[in-house]
Image 1 (tube, helix red, strand yellow):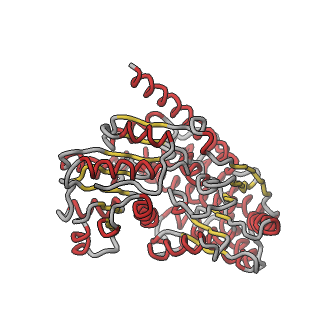
Image 2 (cartoon, one colour):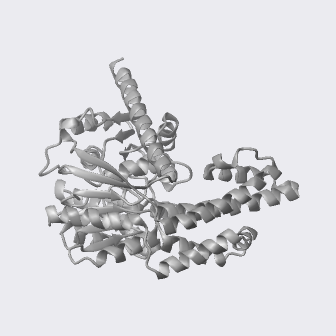
Image 3 (cartoon, helix red, strand yellow):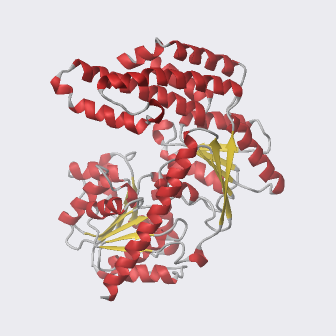
Length: 498
């Protein structure tokens, strides 16, 4: 018999555990309130209740999975040799050997591949836990795994965990359907207020420099001149109101008509592609800086598409590229960089032991921030990026450990930091270098601070740009999500009472 050790579950964790014993359940808890505790409570229960059964845990990244292994080690009597950490980095024949163990903790893509190649089966598994369950939309591997598990397991039970299931009831219902969920357990910040650390939030606006505004003006002029041509394909929305979303939808509609081989359709697809690229360049300039936009121009120059070739023929674009190179040679930076450095230095003056997490969307922005901050002796900065961007999973785990242990005081990262990672000792301050319009990503980012003590969050916003729209988009979606969860919570409680 296995047991829980060195752990006293909170009342709401006990309630959730009791309610998840017999029904596949989606558990929604605010970040930092111990969703993983419900995983180990239920895992130990299922292993003891169903003889010779096994447990599978899936989450998107190896660093997150490594933390799950550690949680089992710390809080259960399950021997370490009975827990397998499985990733695609392990040879297939070695993975088969790992699958003989009691608890399989894996990335979903790896399990999906091994099921497809008859190297893995859910036959004897009594629990499948799906972490970061908000990913279970579209064709994500979670959906395939949940379906296979329900087919193959003789005693199926699914536990799905997330802090941010999505902004609408339709999105949450899609997740429930894809993961074969029968019940929902929701606790909002209001329900468990005594366990939530306070977070101070600030929005700081920066103004583009006159030099960057020159490039902005050139790009806007280029966009307007070609957006006027949308009228030729029947798109009548005023140019000043045309958004990237409009262009993507229009392009998708045009692609559906490709079989008709109408010249205006081909023209429209090329035109929308051109406008999307100019709009992207404008976004990089406004939210990131000169180096990211220069890298974009270099990459675009290698493209053989008609849209790319047309862009480089535009006088405004040629002038924008020339000005970008000139400003980089003069070491002109986006004002966010100076504000970021100032914030960190001021905080370190007040508390030399302070730690910071900086979120940025783009790898080349992260490199620029890293180089810019490294000049300062008191700032010890490191980065956490995905495998595709150059860090192995082993290096990712080592980076998190180094930051947790205090060898670095600033951790810069992309979306890999956002999901689930518990940085020991926490971070005192999270800085959003750029703004994400997604409520899910915003919630995940904010969850990286204030896990064990009061935390601060600072958002850097470029004034009079799309970032201000992103700010309110994210805020409104998050507000809608919380209302949706509260309604679903009341519905669930009503069903339990009846």
